[in-house]
Image 1 (cartoon, rainbow, N blue to C red):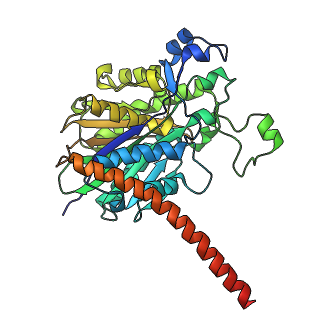
Image 2 (image 1 turned 60 degrees about the vertical axis):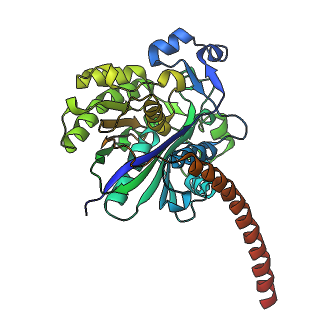
Image 3 (image 1 turned 90 degrees about the vertical axis):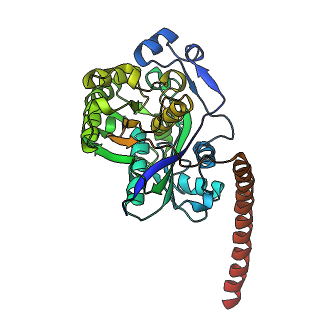
Length: 375
């Protein structure tokens, strides 16, 4: 039996807070005209108190699951692609797994900056195709506003927060993920980075005072790199899928800069109406940008059953990649009653997490007392 990996559920989550270019112009030396002309960005979403990479990821993941015939307990794997994890460890994906109640799933974070969602999607798809797993949840989630130097106009105008998620399921129906390209070049790692906070530059008064825990970017080098690799990765992944460019109904690119996307379109000889653009409303949400754009395209009817899609991204690392897929409509609609039951299940997942924590405390007290007795 030939196995295929299909996207059967999708969901997104963005903060309510909107930060406009006009507001930014009150914070740094910039203007709406300057930002729009250079990036295409008009506004972005910013997390508030109590919101985090994990909370956005869990919300997007729950919304994706609701569209499927799966419960969280049916998931075999949870991957969270992020450049702004909740902690160095534990993995943000483990916190999401617990929040959703995905009790049978392995979970890990994937760090490949803006390319992370594509790589995570390919890894999950290959695990499904080879028979290692049946169901996976892949999420791109970011709170880059917490890594931005709000006095640096070269970076603070670019980034926003949000999350997007896909559920992948095994199927005998042809289609789904067709091919992928994954590339990297560490020699360019320094042109887009957060230098401190890891083992190379542990946190000190000096690293904090020098703002080494914020995003550092050489914009000109990133622009040149991106315009070079976007078109090439798209061509390569289409060829690997056994398709021609004119068979691609829609390209969903990483939303980093409108001019980069326009350059890729020219390089491919494709009209801009074949590209999804929402950077004007969200800015650069890194690994979350492609799934957010895909969710909006689906909601607006721009993706139809049978369409061939290309997802393409680039990011820090340096990393870049593309994924080709054929969209296949889910076989069955999920009734509203089942969606209501999912809400109840999500509530009990939170209760279960609290209970597990209490049990762990009790076990610690019991085993701790036992060990003292043995001494």
